[in-house]
Image (cartoon, rainbow, N blue to C red; front, side, top):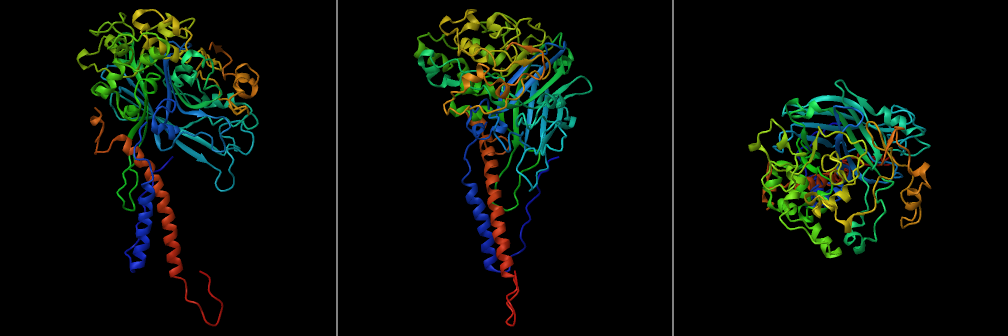
Length: 576
């Protein structure tokens, strides 16, 4: 188990001015280095906000929630972190952060507050010591193999309806980073060994997986080159992520435990880090258990292409219940930037504003029970739960799922816009084409019922590069082999997509059954600092700690030198 460090021992009273000056130098050095840390920070999706771009272990890249297709009465959550994991990224590879808490939260009554929270924390089991730099020193055939020198375990806790957290798992096994075929000849077995079934039917998995998000990220080059010429390349092909998957019964997350009367839930994932303050005094340390949210994700692409740059870090520190209280956030939904960019680039007229259809998709869920909702169908708003009090309902950004929607025999990658009511934005399945759906949605397809023909091809990446499994945890196995095949410009990517490096770069799924593929309100929470400042302070504290340690070594060395025995005239000089 990980521990929180205790206070740093303070030196005794100084007897000489020189000693005091030396100690003061240590503190000054620490403060000076702390001043080099970032002054602002925040938090998540694939590198879409300033802080997470430099702290990938807390970067929540994607969230999925769907009815489990092979297990009636159960739903599955999948949340991913650490984007762009290059498979050859040794020797440390990609552990979960041990100083963070990873959360999946559920709101079933529409007040935008969690009614169920599932929390994972991770611990290292590191046997390398000072003897080697290797992750493993031989083939690894099991999670407790003596050749696996570094591994992790997790603790899973849950809280329902505001009750204290209850521990569900301790010492849970984490599937390691996939080093390569020589080091891990049967990674599918390691995946299976890291999949745990709990009393009551829960299934849990934590470990590395192929990044299931598929898209062409050249959208940022003025929307695919300005003429849709820069499409068709899966930017994330070959990369891995760290995944957490959880499968639970409907009744565990439905309002009052009754999914028939109350089938709609809202879901979001977060990462929390410890809140730390620096006063300039030796001995200040992080406070155990005092965490602040630094990453948040509900619907895909919201913080990437809806929220503007200056709000990104702030948005990821917000709890959903505050979304509707920040005019700048709401304005980006009702008057989004993306349609105007599309109009400029391609001449497709932007829909009239305000965009109440996007309010339904992102903030309320799709329902006929809102006065201004233009999408005339009851699909996935908590307002449709029979036991919800409408007066308590709070618009908020989250991924909403109707548990009563039948599983589609043949899923359509465009989800609801493609006539498949089980797909995004009614939850999100691994095979849902989030980019193409989002482009059509911001162009008004959800309220007109018609796709925009000029953008029908989307980014021309219609499926993941690796197939998904047909049973929990569904994710494809992690990739092995370099993403860059040596061409220096990504020239090798085409070969991998065509199957040329299938054995090395595109492993088959673990399961043989494969499916197709104003911001003032943000400041001063609990003490005056913005969440961004708190996180930046965490980084600064780490730098200050290094400086303090170096300063302490200098001080100890100086004291030892001062206290050395005086030289003896009749013999050799005594050693220090």
